Image (cartoon, rainbow, N blue to C red):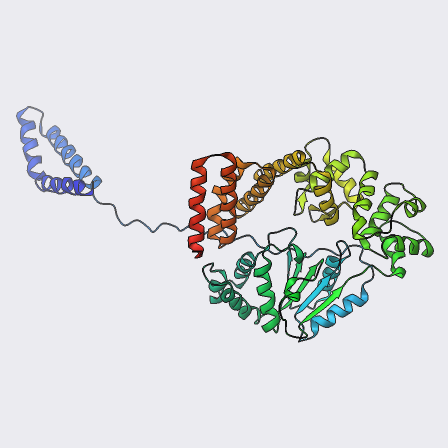
Length: 499
């Protein structure tokens, strides 16, 4: 096409070069035809203008400006705001011990262990409030997010910014050890304090253990608090340098603290009664005392009735305590609690209402807050861990659970936002539809989120998405889809060097 345009243009150039002669001939012809001199001149001008216009139309286009490169949105952050330690009572000795360890130059790994609901998170949050200015505090919640070494490194590369070390930390083709060493080189210039909550739920234990081991072996200005129900394998299996790890195993509150704690939850009793409740609540388990106080203040049970009927609280009988709490709730509030259990992360009222699906939801949300089943976190609401696990695993039947997951997935897809938020919500919807067995939605969403995850450097996550999409394709029996996702999965492993 360009050659043809060039040929026409050169031909027209020859015509225009003889346009004066053509104009004279046109004037002579017009006069001979009896049109007159003026008319002949007009005809000549029109002819020359048409030829010149065609010439310039065929002229080659000038240089185009370079296309504006669309900048990829930043990856989602792994970090969260620290929880607010509400109704916090006691734990002065534990706080003092942890702060002393934190300021010990030899200690950089601080471990808080204990049963679920014993108060590990609130104690750590209280400690974080007392840290002096100048420390960069970062919270990671393993219950709410898929915490992997890859996601952690990508999030930290964002914080490093333009420093050359960021390129090493975020590069997925480099060895994990090399990326971790580059990260530590950056961290040692700063004063970072990481709080990793529910570490027993970490998704990539091997990868995160590598980071913790390097911190324990080499870090001087970096500290990590770990909250877990049991001692992590990194402490059990790896040979840590002596003195770098401080462990505090939590027990219940002291008997003399029970009266104040119960009062903070609306139950005013005398000291002797408070001590009896403390003993029945597994010698001061905060969650058990909270359940006890709520059943008296909201469920209209008497203290004597509960002391006579409830077994001594222990993790083995936690289900009986939780079932008693739910039995005191109205049926529709129990149904909302069950529907809310499909969410891992805090959810606004609109999300809770969408999954609940019927009736007036606002009043039920407020009621569950009054009963301490839901806890406000900004404009969202989080379900207590023990209650969420109990409702999800013990009360939800298979089909009802799948329906709630489908509704949650649809709600995530309805949310507005920029490209980064949209992809985050699509990934959240992908997880919900996967748990619901919604294979067609899983495949459709996998196509949408795979490439952005690769762009962000979350190659492991993209590989997992491909694996689940392949599983979904096999469930549907679509051979073409199965072949497509086999190919995509192979590409992901090839790019990672897994061959």
